[in-house]
Length: 142
Length: 142
Length: 142
Length: 142
Image (cartoon, rainbow over all chains, first blue to last red; front, top):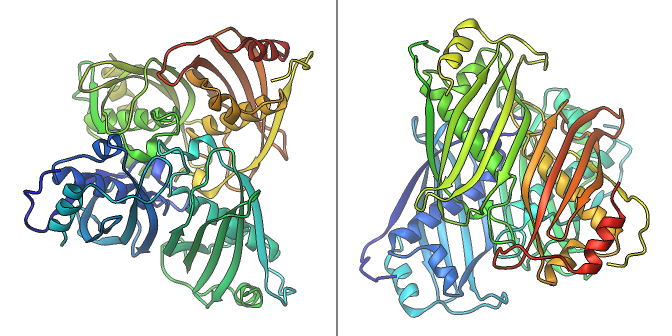
């Protein structure tokens, strides 16, 4: 993860709502926004010059330890959705992401969320992230 | 929904972790706890003498507007899980549930969560719950 | 749905495997390929000049009545995947799609599948598709 | 896996449809029946005196290589569902399960399915099942 990112990094990912993501309320089931947040932070990490798949190969897992979501308006089947992700904190053993999920066509805000992830090893023990990774994350904080 | 519930109501649901609920971290993917919370409040509502399916037939939808989860320890495939649900607030147009999710065999606490749900109609507008329903919910608060 | 499609229509959709789609076997859980097939036929229908969302608004639902899948090799987290969809049959009340799902980088064949969908109305009764829709589907058969 | 099972083994599992399993067609999304089949064969394997979790710990994975489903009628939210599972074939490196999924209250047949699973090791190579396991499976064929 090169530390050539000296300014805040924002990821913007666009997706289209899948039929399988709806429920009988005819809107996206609320659990799926956590999946979209995951797409957002995956993309942000890629922008830092590595990939989460690569991080796992190095034996570091980022496990969600806290998630907070506010649902403002529903997404519907076939809507185009934008997930905007920023980093709000990076410590040696945890990292916090903020998300704004909106309708990509109307700009309507649908969900705001924050997740904190802990850096653990394959046995589930808290471990410090590699120094270069922590520095890259810190440099990218919004 | 009969109002014959004059004391706090607690629901306890037991489930077994499904293979499809795991991810490559070899633990339950974090989105699924929201599904388990849904099972918990469905059961609690049934204990009040109605069912969420029945409520929807009457034109009232309970939509999640806020969700907060803390992940303490992971659940794994085939684990027996207990979801304990209580009511912590009931207003005319919203209701708040608290959840403790634990390993049913060891008692280990896995996740604590709170969700607030809003009472809406088929068009997504906030509406007051029927009086008898709100009273039953209030009487059941922990 | 304009009938200006006089030759076979093939859809190719590219997606990236989501973390939430993996299971503890460290590959994509087999149910998710059905979701990807759904993305494929949604895209193919869009290529015919309409959208499945639009079809549902007209009161026609396409319900899966048969699905057959062969799993040749696993997809893994973060892989780029290509879903190639063609139409193999169109009748007044049913339509059959064929899918080839492959690794977009290596070309390796992962899954081949076929689904038959029935045309039903909101009450679940079999109904004939509108004539222009059936003709557009027929013209697009591979 | 003790080989004390000298006659056909049938598993019957009962579940209740989860809200998260529905889609905007107001029925269970078709991918979820594959998850229910998984519950069925997990239970059948448990009846043979072992568990799939135990089998994986011994280094054997059972990967779905073929799935065929026919959808006869839809399941709906909160329905009680019965999954009946039998074994129809067992070879040294594959095993085939048959499923009948029905409404537990009305007996209506919803889905019939068959899945073939291959015995693989952690690297995804086909391997023979341990002899006692294959014998137990063979003895349980319907």
